[in-house]
Amino acid sequence: MEFDTDIAIVGGGLNGPALGLALAQAGLRVTIIDRLHTQDRKSPDFDGRSYALALTSTRLLDGIGVWDAVADHAQPMLEIKVTDGRAGEGPSPFFMHFDHAEIEEGPMGHMVEDRHLRRVLMEAVATCDTITVLDGETVTAQAVDPSGVTLTLASGNTVRAKLLVGADGRASGTADRAAIKRIGWDYGQTALVCAIAHEKPHAGIAHQFFMPPGPLAILPLTENRSSIVWSETAENAARIHALSDDAYLDVLRPRFGDFLGQISLAGARYTYPLGLSLAHSMVAPRVALLGDAAHGVHPIAGQGLNAGLRDVAALAEVIADAQRRGQDIGSPTVLDQYQLWRRFDNTALALATDSFNRLFSNDNPLLRIARDIGMAAINALPGARRGFIREAAGLTGDLPRLMRGEAL
Image (cartoon, rainbow, N blue to C red):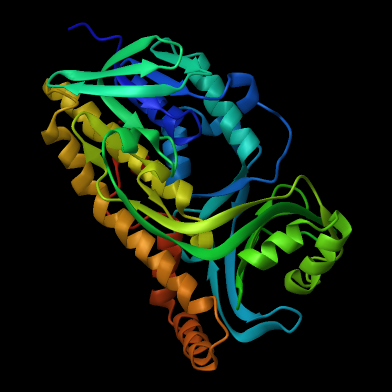
């Protein structure tokens, strides 16, 4: 049978377009299908969403040709400070401090606003001759046969591909239609997310303040602004989010502290519930999952998008190598190679973020003593500090070529 495209990607957020651009470099035809219209996803307004991109993620973006367009809007993360305490009481004297100067590769990562990263990916996709975007379309059915997969769209049109990739989030329709089940649970926490303007410079320092209801991350943006990811119990978060902007800031100030001077809101604020979601498998016949469609983790370490981009780099490499060898890119042999590469790391990340959240999101006095001693011990050991810094930069593990700064 003839194919309309080599790979069909469902999901036009960030991971889907990144994968499309990587595969296009390998000479493959890609179709990206997204339920939102392009103009809806291209809004220049700042909605508060930002991402902590690890060093290896910026290498990938450079490898697919978009980093230069993002770099002017990116804030390098030069240091990370991790503390423990209670709102209004200030941080514990025991802490961890990670400085990028302890590794040779450069800044551990960069903070980038969603609106800038999304825009440059969309612009790059729009100018690529071998990528077709079907926006405002929803997949209603997928039928797999020995040679490929046929997608039926809500419009009545069909798309025939050798491989289907689900990059459609935690409620992945692609995974559901492939009968891939999930395991997960709700944390009873909600993330309050916004951006804050402050009168003093942040010096490129990211802060993670662990409090009993959940962690508060203060992440540096360009100019005198920081991104806030503030976890509270679901009940508290609903009450806080319903407040006026001034009252919201009154609740935030004792948690934020005064180390950056006066603060004010610098964009919209929004919330999302926190939980763990892990697909039983990252692959099925003619189907591969990546990003949140495969693994949704707690934002405690800011690794959600980085893990998705590792999936992108690994899947692109596996497919490109298979194509060069003349293999069927949707065969079980190829897809199993991708799953073998990424499954363990993603499961380990999910369990690590889950354990960290449970360890720190409580006020148990014995656990407080244990974690404070643990942080002080790590901070006192240069080798341990360097290991954490390299982990934050994404430099550990079996890195795909695009994340090593090499061509696909």
